[in-house]
Amino acid sequence: KNEVEQSPQNLTAQEGEFITINCSYSVGISALHWLQQHPGGGIVSLFMLSSGKKKHGRLIATINIQEKHSSLHITASHPRDSAVYICAVRGYGQNFVFGPGTRLSVLP
Amino acid sequence: GAVVSQHPSRVICKSGTSVKIECRSLDFQATTMFWYRQFPKKSLMLMATSNEGSKATYEQGVEKDKFLINHASLTLSTLTVTSAHPEDSSFYICSARMVTHSYGYTFGSGTRLTVV
Image 1: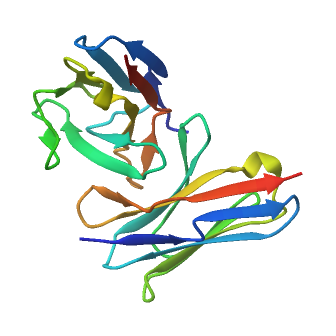
Image 2: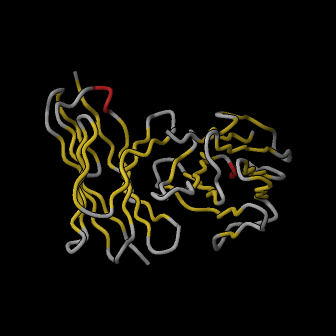
């Protein structure tokens, strides 16, 4: 069974700071997803990665398959980035295993 | 982009009643949908996998008679919480697998169920 860990568990940053959230998993995967969950609960899929790096606006996601590790970076953070960020991995079936989430608060 | 509409977003019901939650793919066909449950300050847990035209596959420990899943069309899956109890209060969210070359996944906005 895949174990997914995230760090940090909680993160408070000042507006404008560069933020990094890390995810590590224990067994091989077919894809890794970064999800954003806002206080109301709705989930938005930010990235799906199987290798390398993806960028969307101020968000950058990287994955190192050999090291079983992924990072989500937020540049020029803003209070509206405050949310829970969840790393979810998918093996060679279809099911996700979710990390515990990182709660980010960006202060103005 | 691909959108999954989940309805209702919030529902309060009395103990013993049943509640139906809908998950609808708006601009793509979803042969497979997933239902998850999230307890407060906990991560999402897969409840069941719903395949169009066949019976859902439930995860260990999930009562299939209590959480009825129907996936009658390529754009709609429903989760019915039967004879709801306060311990069923939770956040329920669906996800759909997009049958495209990318085989991406998209999530509904979630339903917060409170049983009183």
